[in-house]
Amino acid sequence: MPEGSWYCNDCRAGKKPHYKEVVWVKVGRYRWWPAEVSNPKDIPENILRMRHDVGEFPVLFFGSNDYLWTYQARVFPYMEGDANSKEKMGKGVDSTYKKALEEAAVRFKELQAEKELRQLQEDRRNHKKPPPYKHIKVNKPIGKVLIISADLSEIPRCNCKATDENPCGMDSECINRMLLYECHPQVCPAGERCQNQCFTKRQYCQVEIFRTLSRGWGLHCVHDIKKGGFVNEYVGEVIDEEECRARIKHDRIIDAGPKGNEARFMNHSCQPNCETQKWTVNGDTRVGLFALTDIPAGTELTFNYNLECLGNGKTVCKCGASNCSGFLGVRPKNNPPSDDKSRKMKKKSQLKRKSQQEVIKEREDECFSCGDGGQVVSCKRPGCPKVYHADCLNLTKRPAGRWECPWHQCDLCGQEAASFCEMCPSSYCVEHRDGMLFISKLDGRLSCSEHDPCGPEPLEPDWPPQSPVGKNCCQTYNMSETY
Figure 1 (cartoon, helix red, strand yellow):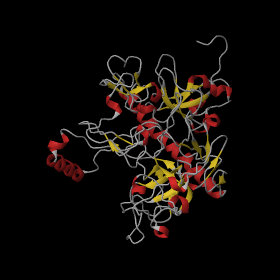
Figure 2 (cartoon, rainbow, N blue to C red):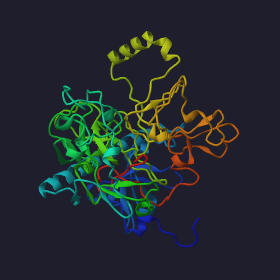
Figure 3 (cartoon, rainbow, N blue to C red):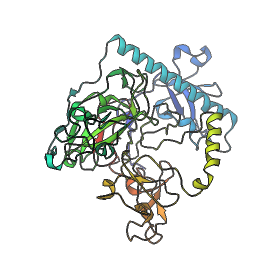
């Protein structure tokens, strides 16, 4: 307990409760109860005549519809998702309190929607523009970072021909495209007909920046985009560890906050229609955004930030997807079947391949080490769905035979692993697992200390999480790890 006089952060900042604000109120020995701050002009006459001191304000309790005069020290701000807390909805809760929680959740969403609508209307009246930033076409190195430029003799040559129907195209067998290498115009045998130079030629889709209702600024496409199509390049300032060590500790980061292109306005979604891919262009690593599915014109473009939260802070996700995890940095939920037809088709497929599914699970689409898609190698251990980039495993060529991924060997001794981190390939045997893995306080999964933001030693707990949805002014992308 603090000694002497102590003030909370809200009081230090001079923050006061506002009319039409949902709050938690404490009265005597009763539990904290949800209520709405009322304007004295709108309350009944008998409540207005009740004895109250200067500084007190009336609140209307949900569930019971009772009024009470209270003061700031007895209230606490209501946060989105509070009504779904297992602690509040546990056994022994009476019907009135459950009703109060339900009414508070509905009213909170109504007030949020009204506030967002007013903000949107005000922005439109004032012709408010997106937050200022400097538009750049290519990545700008900052500090000690160098932009790599390969010698022509080092650039891989594909096996396509200029006479092919779609040389180096999405449907071709271009080895460079399969390995996420962009063809060089002076090396590719297809010459000017090469269709694998979208980064160099900046063959971006036409997009428009627009104001969303609840997630700040966003980006939507002007024309249809086919699945696998190149949408845009994620461009910004490339900074080194010394430049960004106060935020995150990795090799190189793309910060699209002060400088970037339209891609900086793309919002997060737990069920995105685009994905990021790391491509090698003229010897250097570039990050591109590609369509995960056919995208009709006018659709908002989104990708999964795969945000790694630092400290105990969690940013609420407002993507609205059916599999939304609720918070940035938490893996999305599995999507349930949408209708009876899909369930019947799934059951029919399971019966048809029952013998295979008893042994082998469906393969994942993203590298278990870095989280990106692309050309991957899969673990051959029965029942393991994990896939990896060869580069992430420091492999010079694809493994042959019955190769098993590092998730099945202890990181310390190489023996058979018994416990695994669910966020990365870290794993340990019975002898070495003590003290290495923890039950995450965030989502209850088994995690190593690096991937449990609420673990025993959180990194920089006072630093807020990066790239909150809608702000679009501090998005960063790690070029060597997850972003």
